[in-house]
Length: 388
Image (cartoon, rainbow, N blue to C red; front, side, top):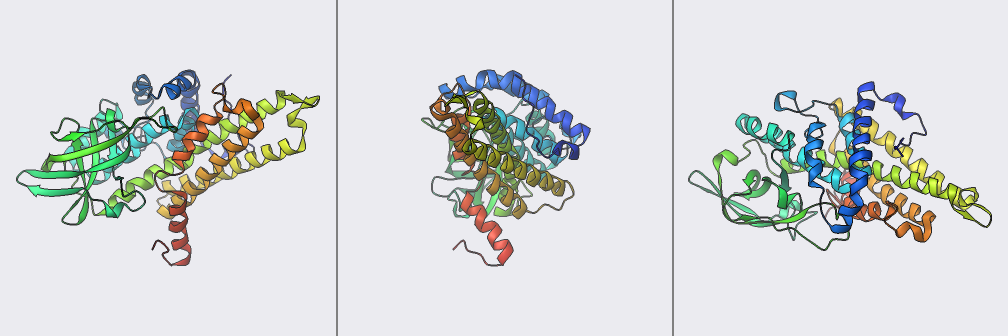
């Protein structure tokens, strides 16, 4: 059965024809290509690599970047709708696209030289090259400024030493955007997979994001030529700008998980008969379904306005933090309530609920925890930093 979406408030009327067409195109791709295979990949702990070329053909990678680099030059709402539909398939699919677009192509476009942009962006858009983003370290997640990875200037380039952790796409990536301190200031570097001393072992035994490649990056005296230093990076702020791009996509993406959890629970409640009538006819079940629908509608309106602000150049990183914080928490709660409605059946992979719930445990944490986004917005509205 084709997915029709959830739109109780006729929010579609606020979208352009192009935005709706793009959403429908990605929706059909997810229905036809992702849903039939994703449970198998999740169960086996593998990423469906065969989907990458078609995702590139659909213009998903770097979708908001200029056409001169082989990108689609879409607005931010259209990009958000793409992320929503991909995450409806699985958080791992959306994560792959988010990393390629927001955490690899965006920093190259924003902080790279013309030569770097001309070389890398078309290849990344076509998925001829796959990228990853190396910021988080074993001992520094919420406090990236404490990173231990170092860059030392040498003749013709830099030597990098350090370790990164929890890196999506790391093992399969051709290039890593690695952040390291050079003379105490954070800079970005493009580290290719064949550079001597660089390795990216995959992290196994995950209960979450199983249909996604998660890796460690090890840099052992890796020589990076001057041509691979991102010349326009300006300290930790540059890395955090990339995170804002990724967080924006996440705020949209998790709505896909919300919708599939809600529609699965609604359909199940209508057909599951207990005490002579469907459980959808009982007040407690209806209360849960109405709460789910209400939260989905609020989340949809939140990201739509955020996307419009972003297209107008008015969105601030605190706006993005508020949306990421709210939508990730609500998405996880919706999945938990949906599992309650399905009862014991909710733990079976015949239904997508537990897979999305497990994924969202990671999505709520990465790109800034719920608590960190609370403090980001808190500082913005009060003027007082509560981080220390």
